[in-house]
Every structure is written in structure tokens, then in C-alpha cells.
Image (cartoon, rainbow, N blue to C red; front, side):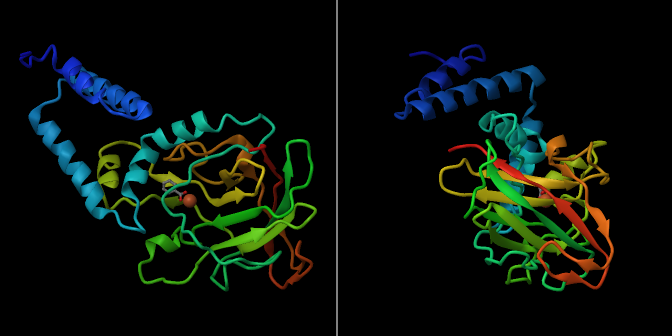
Length: 286
Ligand code: BEZ
Ligand code: FE
């Protein structure tokens, strides 16, 4: 019998987890054991610190529900989400870059027509975002679904408002045969990530800025092309270079240009000043 020592415990645990029947599960779990043990050795983890970590994980699970994704938030602020996005979306340099999904996406948004208003009368400056979806060679992609969501003018998402049970600032738009799309919303605001849970507790012990720059989220899907999860950020927005979840990319920063009352890109008309952003999404083949 091999007795356990501080020196051999890592090998013993790796050996045990290498019995996983699925090869990828074996690879991931044995590497996890090695790295966790190395981490504990490197920082000489105390029992009190280990217990604090277990309690932090428990609290992270306890505060999570179908609208609050505290584990995703933890992964985001640690830079893990964005690392996984980068490794798995090594896109052609001419394709629109991907960024984090974040914890506030809600499935099943209502479908709106070209120029449909997903803000539905909420207070804020009208913002029209229009452009096209194309393949890398510029071929228009018709029938692409743009699933769009954002915070309100106070920086709050529907997912953070428990009393809301109908879609708020989220909708799906489908590109026309020429690849064009147009959506109407209100200007988003930069916001603080939720700070009232275990992630906020950790961030509060650092000098880390807990804000995200103003942005609109997009999830693009259409047959034959790789799905794209991304954002558009407002040019000149505060926190662009300190995004707490490492999500900003230069190619995703667009001007929100001020327009006088008058014709709008959907063929309609605005009676009040409005903002216009233009963006052409370029998708990679599947
Ligand atoms: C978001 O943009 O919705 C988001 C992303 C990561 C963490 C928190 C919020
Ligand atoms: Fe967001």
C-alpha cells in the first residue's frame, strides 16, 4: 500500500482521476488536479484560507439563479471568459471579433422588423444601429438573426429586475436579402457589474474599477457561418480602457453620431435629436 505524503499526493490524485473513461474528461481533470495542487503549494495555502475559498464558492452558488449568473461573473472578472473566447475564436483578421457573452443574456427575445424599437418607450436618447451582415468576401448574408440586448439609460439589465416578466431592451432582428439590418433602441450607459455578491466582495478588496463601458450586445446566428457573440462599444465612452471583464476591442468601438430631428435609417422620422451608429458585421464560415 502506498501511504499518502505531501510529496506523493499529487501523483496519487492524478492517477485516480486518470481513470476517467472519456479521454477529454481525463485530460481536463488530471490537469486540474495538478494545477490546483501546484497553486496550493505555491501560495502555501492555509486551512483558514482553504475554508474561506470554500465558503466563497458556496456563496457564489447560493446567490445564483436563472437570472443571476455569479459564476460567469467570477470567470469574467478573472479574465478567464475572455481567454476562452480568444482561444476558441481565432477568427480571420477581417472577421468581426468576438467578446464575452456576459451574465445577462436571456433566451427567447421577441422578433422585431427592420427598424423595430426594442426600447419600447423607455426613457433615453434614441439610437439607431444599422449596417449589414456579410461573409468575409463581402457577400451579403440574408436571413441572419441578430439577437440584441443591452442595459437601460441607468445601466440596468432586464435580468437584474426581478419584477419584470416581459422583454425589456432585447429583441431579435433578421437581415434582409441584401444583408441589411436596422434596429432602434436607446443609448446604453456604462455600468457597474453587480457588487452585492461574492464577486463584488472580492473586487472591493482591490483597486480594480468595477465598471464596463457603454455597449450593446449581439449574438449573430445563421446557417453556414460561425455564430458570433460580440458587442458594439460607444466611441469615447468612459471605462473603454479599464473594462472590468477585459471585453473591449478596438474593432468593436463605433461612433454614436448625433443627428438632428429628421429622417432615420429605417425610412421613418424622429421628432427629437437621435444617435446613429453604423456597423457591418463580417462572419466566418462555419
Ligand atoms: C455584460 O456586458 O452584460 C457583462 C459582462 C460580464 C460581466 C458583467 C456584465
Ligand atoms: Fe453588457
